[in-house]
Amino acid sequence: MSGWYVVNTRPRQEARAELNLRRQGFRAWLPRLLQSRAQAQRIVTLSAPVFPNYLFVELDPTSEAWSRINNSFGVRRLLTQGDRPARVPTAFVESLRASVDPRGDVALLAAEALAAGQRVRIVSGPLFGQVGTLLEMPSADRVRILLSVLGVETPATIDRRAVAPAA
Image (cartoon, rainbow, N blue to C red; front, side, top):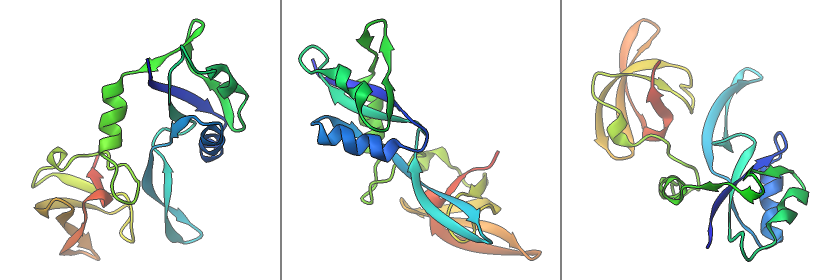
């Protein structure tokens, strides 16, 4: 009975672990998302793991030699319950896989998670770190926000994936 399981990877070796598991014939999946961060006085947007130090692997523990996962490069261990791999609810992984955009990145927040008038923070792109007020969502992939730039209220239309609710 095939299902999804969690692999704990070594620090910053998620991609290496995924590659090695795929080479061994396992169906491994490393969910990624776009993240921006300041680096050397500029904003850099990178694809980063959604769950640092973890990835998913689909296998049938009754018929596959799953113990070799623990000996793969980049892998710390396959998470288990007792002496059997600990299965992740299939609905969780499939809903996460369904939220992947055409570039292969996970869009964590649905458009319904935002509402007009809500404070939002820009999490990627050249306006990274700015906080504004959501004005409207003119389409499924764009949002219009009001930013305070140099003391002037300025509307901006940006990619929906670039904003998240402000804390």
